[in-house]
Length: 330
Ligand SMILES: NC(=O)c1ccc[n+]([C@@H]2O[C@H](COP(=O)([O-])OP(=O)(O)OC[C@H]3O[C@@H](n4cnc5c(N)ncnc54)[C@H](OP(=O)(O)O)[C@@H]3O)[C@@H](O)[C@H]2O)c1
Image (cartoon, rainbow, N blue to C red; front, side, top):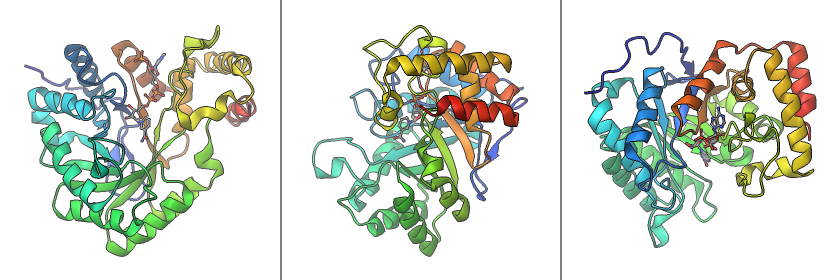
């Protein structure tokens, strides 16, 4: 039977999501890719438990996740929750999302009232939970009035099925509109989950961070390594098979050779700090307290452990930050 490491919180300083009472570990684990029904359960369970043993008390899924077998990432996490993490439920922050395809038909996607209210029940069933800590609208749905989505999310909270609410992939005006409506209803809205990494600083340049700050909310950063690009994997070149996330397309605007050159320069800078490139990329995202948590995706306990060592050196000098700015302006 699994027993969590007694020292699991020794090296982790939880960070608040804006001005809310919800705190998250600085680095959390997302189960988007390769945590589905086709993946080896025992190996994935090992990564999840290795993460919890190191103070990663936040796990992020979506009803859509599962590498095409929608819902199967929630089911995998639900199995680990039922068989191993049940005694630790009160320590965990479990997040899921509704908004992308989960089943055929018009209510199998989007954020209508019907999609959200039936979606949360289905997610809770797969997760083996009575409630999630955080429920997100996974995307801004242009076919549904924002007021309807916001009210449905608020009703999920009132029904005790989610403790806090977030949105994901909402740009600045979309987030502001939702925030105004959540505020009017008194909904515990706490976060926008967005793509953010060294090569993609849209959340800074668009004013989103300032909008969230004003609202007393926080940001959770996803894709911090840009599909593993910001690690030592591609220092010798980026293969044609490399698939970049749609939110990071502009990274290759000047071609892959230019990116490889910058990766090597960033790697040198990281080594000068006594870090790997991946560790520096994660630490850099945590330089502003508005970023409560950085969601990594990994199937490897070795990568997990390496990435968590980013927490050993979070401070940056002004010179290092200026050099990073120069190297990431592609
Ligand atoms: N809200 C949204 O729309 C949205 C969108 C995308 C993602 N997300 C969330 O964010 C989470 C993370 O996203 P992501 O998977 O794009 O994150 P990521 O951490 O930026 O990239 C994951 C990739 O990096 C590799 N990797 C991780 N650590 C490494 C290391 N130290 N050295 C070399 N390679 C390394 C992984 O391969 P290995 O498996 O080999 O380690 C994997 O291929 C997702 O699971 C999901 O929860 C949300």
